[in-house]
Length: 541
Image (cartoon, rainbow, N blue to C red; front, side, top):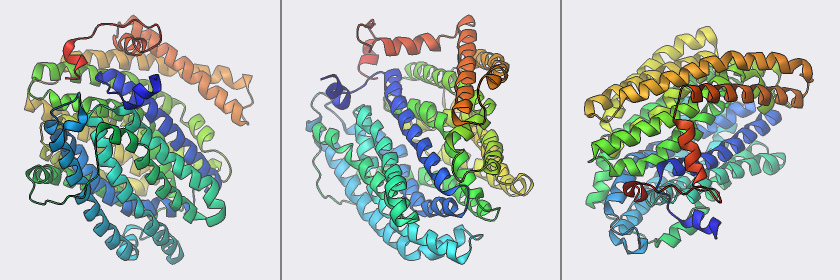
């Protein structure tokens, strides 16, 4: 019964919703790390993984530009505005008509783009990977053509996920990335031995199908019934178009960054593209678990509070501080224990010590912007709640200019690590400009409260930093550092010491975030104290 309630029920508290999304994100990211462990062990940082990651780029480009452009900027606010009956979801006829209209339109557009992409794959990938040999390019084209099935499946799944978020049904939505990674892992473990690299491509397609299927039972229970519907003159659909154009252009800038990184990495030593992606996946772990989880959980509430600036300010302050409270210690652990993390996660099979050194340097530079990436995920959704996707676009354009302008010379000086450094600098610039622009939009950012809390957390992290290094030195003689379990013991022990010191200092400095998060969890534990919440919070407003 409890599982059924969690699966189908709504979650109206942002903090608890973030916990649910965060736990699922942690599992998904853990599976992603396990996936990378398998890939690194099977192939090493060489031509095979370069091919795999390059083949992803064009199908991923289509999905990000069209699906994410529509969903993140337009679908949820408009769908929420059409909902008039949360108690009886099936009676929201206008909202369901709109959902069918978006899904039908998306299918048509994605089918056309996928067919065009399959036909033009050789030409597109030749531009994308100028450093690849003819054989390497031909294999990349084969994989990419099969992967073009995934944008269609993920596109439909993305709309379904947007509907579930609108009803605050976060559980099934949060499971989708887990099943996506399970599909890829299935391909790596069971299909690669039989089909080679094509097995990885099939794993991506299987994962995309699972991403959709796991959400469908909850969607059906809400009352949605699929119905082919095309009406290009529908006003709500036109509104999505108007909103998503600048958002899609903004995503185009982001994708252009990745394209440029791919082009530059393809011209560096073999395996550079693989190292860039592996290091990026590692640094994305805390960004996804904390930054994106809070951003996703907060978005429906933020969308409902745009006309109540005082409540919006209070919600944003809590969300931002809780995000920083989690992201800051995660960052120091990644930076201080990067060698141990990489050896434990990737250091097996054909992934040798030289690959480890290059990945360490790259991860170090990526880690500098974890806080900026996490908070940017929240800030951009505030703009989308105001139906303003133009401002984030212009800011992302400027940040892209910074990224591309720095990536070229720094990649020549630092190799693939230079690409990561340019990426981090541009993300910090993006965050600063978004913050400044949001301040100009209105008094919805409490600089003083957020600033004081941030200083306390940074001080706690600064004290935890030497504690981690001291723990590393103390543990090293006690274990066999030439074995997996020895390195793992050092990693877990030093990270635990660092977290304990960080939390202790935060308690001494009276940071309320730890207590707040415990209260959120404790209210849901068996026998936990059920604190009476504000009526507005209970309605999810």
